[in-house]
Length: 455
Image (cartoon, rainbow, N blue to C red; front, side):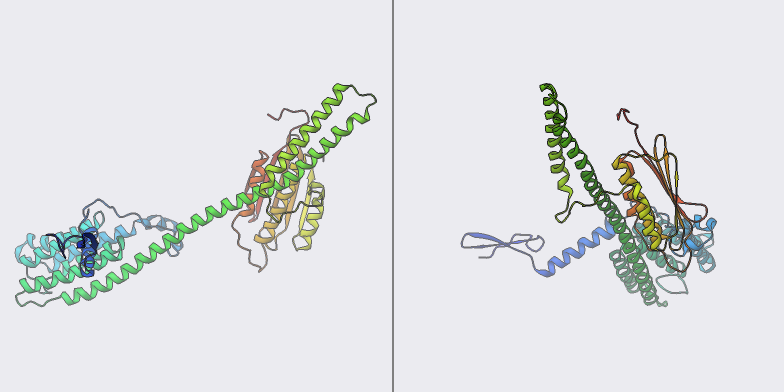
């Protein structure tokens, strides 16, 4: 038994009862399509059409605008607004030159100012401006006679095209399609009910508006795609920086694990052997050394457990000692073999620094020279190591690149890693181009003197 309610074709579902069981079947495909089309029309052309949506300034970072002089480039962000105002002025001029002069000022005001007002409205209420243009076209077609054609006079023709272009550029392709279809429907209806033998220009409006909508839609889609790509690139760059930061922290944790583990092992061994170096040590001393050894072993075990999680599955601790500033000459020799002329200058009293500082300083110089090889081919570099009273100063400077070799592009990962190492040691780092066209990395790492309170 089939039973339909009084709004069976107006609702989303129909009810079918069979053997006491009620089931719901979807409406026919035609009704769903019609409902979807009407909903799209209501959303695009009827909802909040007169909401205040000012035209935003134009971006001035495009390839063409960047080549303009600075004074002109600073004003180019208002170029779309100036174009709309210029179109409105053209419409006023058309109304004055070709309007209804027999009606006096009222005639050219009707055929000039009203269409121009619709054009200016598109600056702040785009879809509402199109409806205003439709009303103006209908009113002027009923009140005036223009030898240029019917139903659009030359001023309303220009104004309607300008409004459609602005709205299509500011909204989306669906709105552009609705405007084109409704414009054709408006022209046909006015010709059927209002034409009295004039030359009709609806086909001309259909052609020119179709071309304008196609161009505006293509430009709008291209700009949207460029904005999406830019946004995705920004997100990708942020994620890449985060990943690089985590990788650098993982590397630092591995290296510090090896450094700290070595010292903790030495503490444990020395604490165990110390009682045997003293003849008849008192029990209190033996207990103290035993406690030191137990705490050192416990700390070493906890350190390996915590820092071990950052090691990759195939990571193996280096068998050779970690590099220090004492091995910097070997690094410079390797760089010179790679084709980079580099000089080293050491100032101050050379002294042994904490192993973490030595390792980080070596890695910073290593990364800075690697950046010179990648980004400044053919340039000479200089490395300065300064042992000062409060810590260690590093400066790596390179000249401007020379030769025909193109620099290798980079994403700034090396700078990120160096900053992370400096921040870990509570130091300071500055980077940037120099006056001679080169680049400079300057670092200061504080080093506390023996016996100084670390707090």
